[in-house]
Image 1 (cartoon, one colour):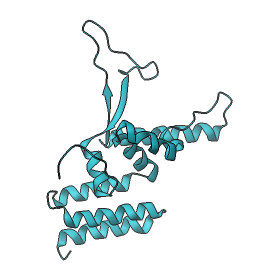
Image 2 (tube, one colour; image 1 turned 45 degrees about the horizontal axis):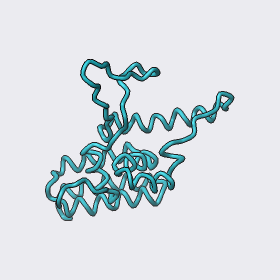
Image 3 (tube, helix red, strand yellow; image 1 turned 90 degrees about the vertical axis):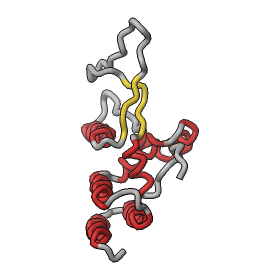
Length: 169
């Protein structure tokens, strides 16, 4: 705790905590600091990067990240608790501007997670001689599902939202 590295992390964490709007966010930051004290496998520079990534995420994005890290059995219960965040209802054709705005913002949460390297799409391998399936909206190869990356799982562990990943401690 008396090192310059921890003081540097603490200053960044305090800055984030002072702007935190929820108890959950403050808990994430506190867990991050606690885990930075006990984890010696990650360097200060790497922990600083993780804290910076945490700062870029909002609470809904953390919920989405955790959802993508869960296995199929765990996803069901989690989905029931957070369905409005995990899979919001798209607006109807006669939806209001506010409904559309909220829907587009929610879609940006998923894109942010992917842009930060915290989740990745998983693609179905086409059979020999077949073309992959394309998404009509994006023109890109259609993914089957999304999953948390190693970086996403590391961040979740640092904020005590980790899930089983098959590795022994």
